[in-house]
Length: 201
Figure 1 (cartoon, rainbow, N blue to C red):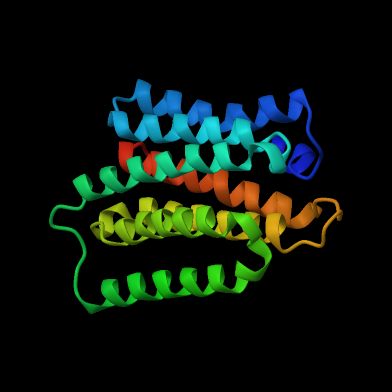
Figure 2: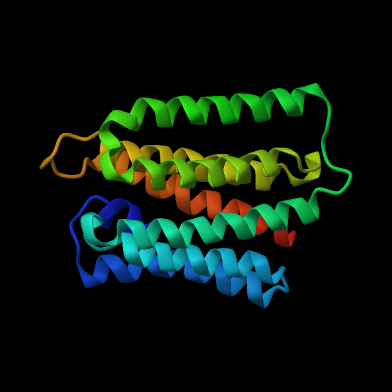
């Protein structure tokens, strides 16, 4: 809460970085302590590493941060595939997956003129996060919280991409989008953690 309302839209600083990393690190500790699959807490730890990188200057640390989150999404894809035995099926799920992938591809295409040398990394990263979302949608309905968390995660990254690549150069971070993307991200990760571990909501 404190990071979202007080620090998410501010510049670099040790307090900001520490709070940002602490949120998902706590979720990783919960996943570990409750016996969650190792890939879950590994995904959360990789996300915390990504948060640490992204708390610095984007022009210097964006690629390492994206690499850490790429690894987190690979872990999530495997977790969701393992959970998805006998999962949801039929045309509604396939339609939702198609809408997610096509919508994500259209968004990346729209961003493309602003991406410059980041075009290829963003496309690769976009592919893995959309794969993660599609895998979450395939889960049984009892795991709806996981699917919701995955979609919130994707929405937060869409907002972040807009802030990084589509905001006018030199313009300060905007308060409302910064707060929104942090809460979508953190509570999306929390929903995934609760859904996978089966902890009561």
